[in-house]
Image 1 (cartoon, rainbow, N blue to C red):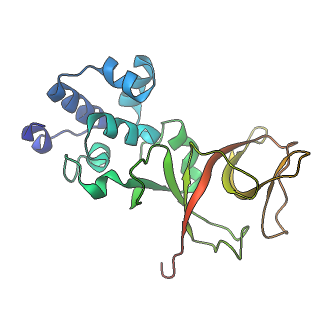
Image 2 (cartoon, one colour):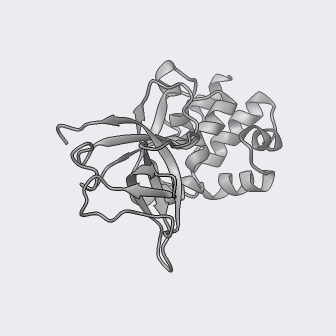
Length: 211
């Protein structure tokens, strides 16, 4: 990778992606194919977002540091730690991150898994799953994994004329259907009568003892 890219004043996400593509002698059509979207979708992504959920995919395709890709700060080239970086998101930002329209910078954390595609973390902001999961725990989810009975998942609950609500629940199936159960029984159980989508499967919990 040419060193001038790292020092050039690339002020936007689009600038940084374009600079690396030019240095690699690759086209936007090539990048779109590598990350599994159309050329038109990539053009929109570059012009209107800061990468959203596609940051890790783009960084992997270009073999560069995703932190530099998001902000232009830090090292362009990958290190072992950079390869294991995932976003730490607030619940209200997940919907925009999933559809690639989240433009703000976000915190990141390190994980041991080197395949971080579709992996993200949240901070649990309620007590619905105590005592197994304390409020303010960091929860790490992977989108590609399918839940089995008893697993813990993050789901998107769709309601009429409202923004989607994201909930953390235990995935349960008893042969008659699927339902999403809170460990604190004062929170209602989500059933198949509700309109919900499973967003990710819990792979790790981290406890915060000091904020």
